[in-house]
Amino acid sequence: MHGTSILEEADRLMTVCNSCRYCEGLCAVFPAMEMRRSFSDGDLNYLANLCHGCGACYTDCQFSPPHEYMVNVPQTFAVARAESYAAYAWPHAFSGLFARNGLVIAVVTALSVAAFIFGFAAFNDRQVLVGIHTGPGAFYALMPHGAMAALFGAAFLYAMIALAMGIRAFWRDIGEPVGMRVDAGSLWQAIRDAGQLRYLDGGGVGCFNADERPSDLRKIFHHLAFYGFALCFAATCVATLYHYLLGREAPYPWWDAPVVLGTLGGIGLLVGPAGLFAEKWKRDPALVDAQRTGMDTAFIAMLFLTSLTGIALLLWRDSAAMGPLLALHLGVVFSLFITMPYGKFVHGIYRYVALVRYARERQQI
Ligand code: SF4
Ligand code: SF4
Image 1: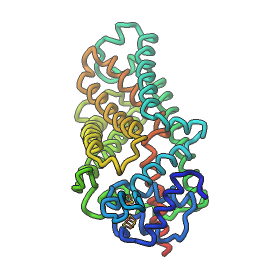
Image 2 (image 1 turned 45 degrees about the vertical axis):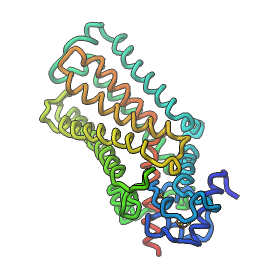
Image 3 (image 1 turned 120 degrees about the vertical axis):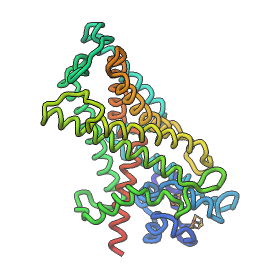
Image 4 (image 1 turned 180 degrees about the horizontal axis):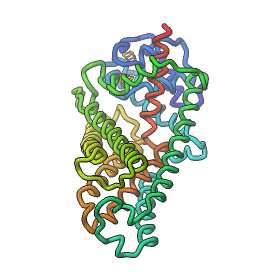
């Protein structure tokens, strides 16, 4: 007996697949499945998070609907994955935020942006909000650097603690004792597999869409979004070092490292999410978890808006639009931080942990 009906269904499918094994070369899921004869809840959550949803095993399967076995691994694992996000959420009282996730994130974002706009207006003279501020320290005419650093530092710290607690619950559930040392080789192998999106390729031909013509576009747009996010994060880290180590205040000239990194990352975060959004509408509805469309869309939209507002701030930072644009950008980024543990962002975290587990299992064969 399993804890939920979707895990019962996942167990049924893995039992069929373990007899068939036709798909064993497609991805990591099937070799990991073959290491087991029975499946606990944790095993199934591990396999569900190892699945990248490429759709190849559905298209290739001789037992997929309308066959009476009704084998649909991608959709079953998509639902199980989403349910696992809520199960591992910390604090558990917030697990309900994964239901109607699109609405939750839209409301939090709107409130965050409104809070920054009203905050800027309340703590400053109106002329400051719509005034022109240029040169080092211009942003801090609207909000003192100390207050900005404390607010975003606290939001980021909270997100990191909540994500770490989620990882702990997942690691415990999938069968690895918490606190057990993970060897560097497994961590490195998982970094390589995640960095290349090795298993988002349908066994080498690409992801499948409604027209059953495989394509690499989903992988390419995913790379753009991921590396764009990483570059933006690097830009923030460099700017922090500039501020505290070199005493240099933002905004920086266009040729300086934080702006170059942020601009390149911002382009990736515009093109990647826009492409993922377009690819999403091409996907075969049989492969996806239709109930979580809001969660997926909200995450893509948040990444896109983070970049769009950041680039708008860069372009118009020397004009009277700087104050309202800074409020908009800070509101979106603050919302991204505090909703990180309660939205689609966690898929990357749990998938990476599942890849670490898989690398360890492969070593032990
Ligand atoms: S998905 Fe279908 S073809 Fe692939 S292993 Fe399972 S039962 Fe066999
Ligand atoms: S959808 Fe792709 S990644 Fe997921 S189990 Fe099937 S082949 Fe593997």
